[in-house]
Every structure is written in C-alpha cells, then in structure tokens.
Amino acid sequence: MPNVRSSTLMPRLLAAAIALAAIALAAAGLGAAAADGPGADGPAPSATRPAVLPRVASVGLCADHYVLALADPGQIVSLSREAVGPLSPHRDLAAAYPLNRGSAEELLLSGADVVVMRSWGAAATARMAERFGIRVVRLGGGDRLADLPGNLRLVGDAIGRADAAEAMAEAAERAIVAVPPQRPGDPMAAYLGPAGGTAGPGTFVDDVLVAAGLGNLTGALRRPGWGRIDLETMVLNPPDLFVLSFFDTTRPSLTVALARHAVFRQLAEDMPMLAVPGAYWPCTSPHLVDAVAHLSGELDRAGFAVDGQ
Image (cartoon, rainbow, N blue to C red; front, side):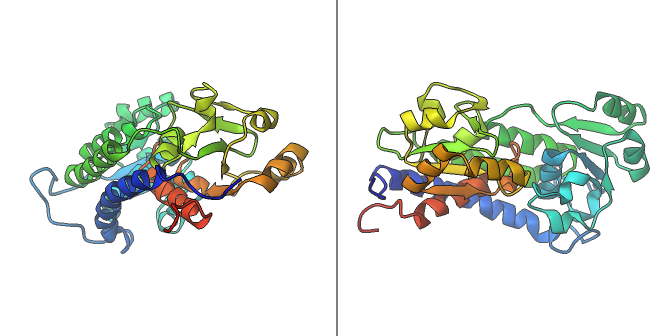
C-alpha cells in the first residue's frame, strides 16, 4: 500500500496542533515552579488562590497526574506509589515526595488537608479521611477527552489553584472544539494493547486517534467502548497502520506471545506500527495532550504526509 496520507489529514493535524500548543504553553507555565522540587516558592496569591495553600495528597495514578500538574511543589505531602512507576511521566519529580499505599493511616500521618482520589474504590479510606476532617476529592468518572477540563477545574478549586486549572481547562476546551470531524479519507488505525485490548468510540483513546487525524478501526466495526479484537478480524478488515501502547510497561511474556503470532507477523510486515508510551494515557489525565502530539509526530516520521510536504 502507498505510504502517503490522504490530503484531508493535514488540515486536521494543523488545527489540532495549534490548539494543543495552547495546552502545552499553559502546562509549561504551571510546571515552571515544579522544576525546583518540594518547598519551592510559588506565585503570589490571587483573587481565587488562598494565601496559604492546603496540603495535598493523592491516591492512585490518575490522581497523581492531576496533583503533579496543578499543585505548587510545597503543597504536596504524599503521592501514590504508582507516581514513580512505569506509567508515570513524572517519575523523577515524584521520587522527591513521600509515597503512600492508599491507606487511611498514611493519609492522616501525611498531614494532608485535601486528598485527591480516583473516581472509584477505596471507600473505607475515603470515609476515614473525611471523619478526621480531610477533604476528599474524587475525579470524575468520565472516559473522554472532553472530561479533562472538568477534572482540571475540580482539582484546581480544591487545592487553591483555580487560576492555573482554569488556564489549562480553557486551553483543553479550545483544543477539543478545534478538532474537525473524521473524514472518509483519514488513514484507518487499529489500536492494540499487549493482550489484544482495543478501544472504540466513547473512550479517550478513540478521542486521541481522531485528534491526531486518524480513523479508528474498532469504531468502523461498530464496537464502542473498551474491548478486545482478534487478529483474524483485522486480516479481514485491514487497517492502514497499527497504534500500539503499553508494550513498554507490560509483562514481557505478553509482548513475546503477540510477536510470535503468525497473523500478527504477517500484518506487521505489511503496514506501519506506531507506538505511544503508556505513561501518556493510562487514564483521562492532563497528559492526553502528550499522546496526541506524540502520535502526530510518529505519523509524520512514518511518512504519512501530503505529497510535497
């Protein structure tokens, strides 16, 4: 097959890139203080930022992502152990903070005023924290790129960083609005995880693929949400390329098993295979923008470009 992207793709990529750059600039401004590590002086108080910021802890990887993206370094008193794991883009920064296993005792001893948690689970821990006067903030349970602005505002308001959160939320909203609808000429991608997992419409993976200018094979097969797709189905409905993720963080046995599959090897010989680091999108986090930017760059490097570009 020709390794040339349809001419409909570049306008979509350019529109997404311009809007996503706004998020990157906002995030860069927020992260400047974080570069100095714990205890660094933060910006001066504003009308929506209290003079004394609450102490913040996070429980769970997605909560870590939001806290590290929004909090002043000196606010953070504890992060989950996942913050230094393979699915965290902030491993080096997170290593400077105390880590927790998500127990109520650890949160109480941390001195946190606010605890940010994922949308589900740890009910007993949350009740105990609230009983001792700690404010518990649960992330929204949405699974879409469009849920990002609401979560940013939710966490920002709770930790006294409303101004910073609003800047990121507004940039995210502009990016979402700027993404044009899919067109018939868009290259068709098959998203695949190590164990055959895939994602269709109604997921942030699908949103990222569309924002990068791709069609989603799972959506074309009318399979919404999270699920699995067998390789034989992809032989009967061949995509233009593969988008692979989490192979860098999973058990080697799963990756090797897939690589040894005869059908997968046949497909791999016939089409590009682009990888997105798992740390960019383990959940609906602020780093979905990094997933879009990375995937767009991988498409260009793979030669999916308009003639003459």
